[in-house]
Structures are given as C-alpha cells and as structure tokens.
Image (cartoon, rainbow, N blue to C red):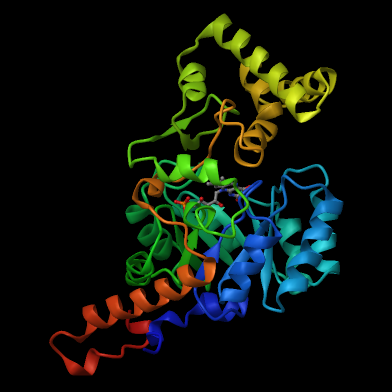
Length: 370
Ligand SMILES: Cc1cc2nc3c(=O)[nH]c(=O)nc-3n(C[C@H](O)[C@H](O)[C@H](O)COP(=O)(O)O)c2cc1C
C-alpha cells in the first residue's frame, strides 16, 4: 500500500527525508548507531551531543556518515560553554539539521540559518513556539507533559493544536511529541495540524538503541503510572521512572536532602571518575548563577553522570531512568526500520479510514485538507 499523500509534509520537505518521523536527541541514548538507523529508515535521526565531548561528537558524525548518506541532525544545549564550537562543527561538517533542547539565542539561530542549517527547538507552550518563530527557527518539537526527560505541564493533546494555532501562517514546522508511539499517533498529529511526530522513548526501546538489555527490561516492565516528574534531580522538572532512589530524593527535606544529595553526588563522582573537587567547583558555579538549593546543585552537577551510570553502564542502583509516560504502553523492541515502516503503514490506513467513509471525493485529501 502506498503512503497516504498527507504524510508528505512541510517536515519531510524541510529536512529532506522520506517520512515525517523524528527520533529526538536523547543524552547517552541517541548515539551514531540509533541515529544512523533512523536516517537509513527514512526518518530524521538526531545525535544527542550535550553528553559528548566535541571530539566524540565529531567521531559520531563520521560514524553516521559511514552508515548512511541520508540527512540527520545534532541536538545541542544552547547554554553549554562550548555551544559556539559545536555550532561551528555542525556547519563545518555540513550536518543539515541542528536541534536545541531549550530556547537558543537569536545569534545562534542566525549563524545556523546563514549556513543553511535547519533549526529545531523543543517547546512546552504555544507562546514559546511563537517566540521561536519570531527569531527565525524553522521547526519546533511541541513536547507535551507526558514526554520523557525535562518536560512541561501542558498535555500533548492541548499543546500541539495550541502551537499550531499560535504559529499559523508563520511557516514554522510543528512536530508533535510526548506520548507518540505508532501509526495512530502520526495520524492524530496530522489531524491536529502538526507536520509530523518526534519520539524519544519509543526509539529508546528499539533493537538499535545502545541501552543495555537489562535496563530495557526495566523500561518494558513499567506501567502508565510508573513514571514521575521530579525536580529533585537537577532542579528542573524531569520525567523519569519512579525508582527507590527517586522516592528517596523526593521525600528527603532540608538537611536530610542535602546529606542525601551530597552522599549520592560523592558516590557517583567516584563511579564516573569526576573528582569531588571538580564536582564541588561546578556545583559552586551553578549555585552562584541560579536559584537552586545546595542539594539541587550538588545533584545537578553530577546528574548527567548519574544518568550515564543508569542507562549506559546499566547500574540500576543509581536509579535515574528518564522516560516518557508512553513507556507504559510499549511492550516490544522492534528494529528501527520495522518500527518506521509499521508507523507509516498504520498511519496511512488510519487516515484512509477516517477520510473514506461517506464521500468518495475525500478519499485522498491533500495535506492542506487534513
Ligand atoms: C533518556 C532520555 C534522554 C533525553 N535527553 C534529551 C536531550 O539530551 N536533549 C533533548 O532535547 N531532549 C532530551 N530528551 C527528550 C526527548 O528528546 C523527547 O523530546 C521526549 O522523549 C519526547 O517524549 P516521548 O519520550 O514521550 O517520546 C530525553 C528523553 C529521554 C527519554
């Protein structure tokens, strides 16, 4: 069966890919293997770079290129001290798409735009999307509250149509995220007016994701109510699997929280090879810059390493497992190619079923009619 015509969208055009399906940047998870597999399958794969050194990012770009000629992207934290060097690398290496985990500065967007690199920003509210359109961003990932990792409060079913309405006529490409997992998600996103879907957790649970099998088993065993949004890890709301470590951090108060944070931070600094002095230095810098408590900065300074210990090294005692709520409705580990192929076939059937019933003239609507 051919793909439904409304699945050729402004997103496929902007990124130069076959399918309006984006595998998002996930720290420690979306490395070269997953990104290359998504790109080869016809979607847009995005390398997570915030958790890589510049040299590692460069090597990961090479690895993706060895495996596929298709377009792919790199995810950045706009506030990273070496963000300018990362942007220069993306431009220099001709990576066609840069995605930002949070709002970039206008000059960062302008530099990428001038080089012809498409830009994506993750947003959690319609007004943020409007602002991004205003500074020349090409696309947004509208991530609803149920999404994985750092996340907002507006659910996907309210956020996506809200972002589409707020940015109508601006030319901004909108990708629906948070709870997306299959063909019905893609069909629904198109009906909401989005140009495609972006998925984190669903791609984390594929054969090509580098997360160890016993950790994938923990994800697969989680239900719809197994996740929690907590500020206890780094001060910003983050959706993770509810583990004993998270419960402990959540329930500790005042001095107890500080003691727990300090002992966790020290334990994990040993595991990650970061010296306690370096840890203290970066915690002090964070404390001086922001409004986080000492316990939050101590943990925040080490949060990336704690996540690494959990999802890369498979140390489940560390217990930091970022995930979307959709984890509770995922029960398999398909290859990326099978996943993308099935999503396209099911979305096409769903759209045909919705459009075909009464009036034969509406059987093959154009994308504008959806
Ligand atoms: C393990 C994990 C790590 C993540 N790391 C990042 C990141 O480094 N940068 C980013 O922009 N988003 C990150 N996210 C958010 C995802 O890119 C994506 O927007 C989100 O997972 C979408 O929701 P879903 O999980 O319901 O698909 C992460 C999510 C997960 C599950």
